[in-house]
Amino acid sequence: MDVASLYSVSPDYLTKYGLNKTAEPQKEKEGNFGSILDAAMNMINETNDYQNAAESAEIQFALGEAVSTHELAVAQQKANTALQYTIAVRDKVLDAYKEIMNMSI
Image: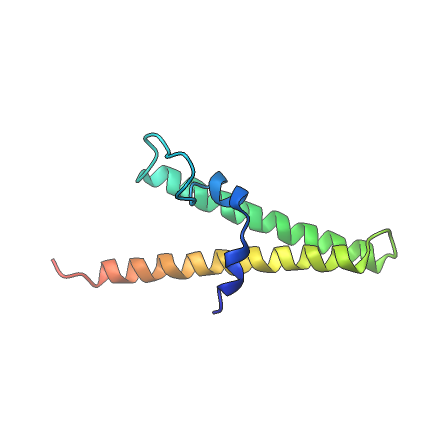
């Protein structure tokens, strides 16, 4: 999977989820599984919101309402990028889980 398009993720998104190294450090939340799970759930919810917005824009365009082709393309691209990012994170989590399970004790 090509994740090169993910380099254009906005700094606001990275700061919001604590992925930006230049942002102010989080207090005691680093390393806490609950905070990681919350961030993952927020990412899934945001991806779902983008998918719903793209579907809504497609329906409005099909009905002939005031949605331009540019706005439709932007909504679809946002949804596609969010989905690619979510899948890339999921794949990395699964790889990490498999590697942990293969460790010998």
